Length: 172
Image 1 (cartoon, rainbow, N blue to C red):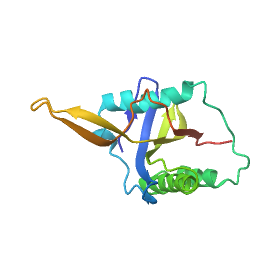
Image 2: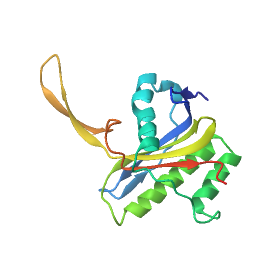
Image 3: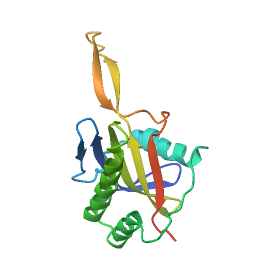
């Protein structure tokens, strides 16, 4: 397993992506974790690191605690902590994303990509849960000077984060 480390002392251990297609009432689960060695370092630092940094330092970020230790999310995270492999991580990523999808079905029609990652910030393990709404962009072909629309691109890191959580894995 490869890891990605950033200038913020953030290490990404695993990441998976799921899709919420609210318009078609469809949840697309992750079938595998992303190959971290395939993520270009500038993509990682300009995208994931920026989102993490923005989330940690946003004045709108709020620290929360689970009301009880018997919480479903804590149980799922503890299962992954006990068995830290790709299979249990994918189960956690899909369960958390599907839970968001179920909640959103009645209140939102906002499609999105959900990134679930096991990260470490200064040697403290977290689960990053990040929902980003897709956008469209226009690209110019430099050969023909024609324009074309590109669908389902992710917003840049300066865009407002829609839904994000950093959940401490060794929750006490």
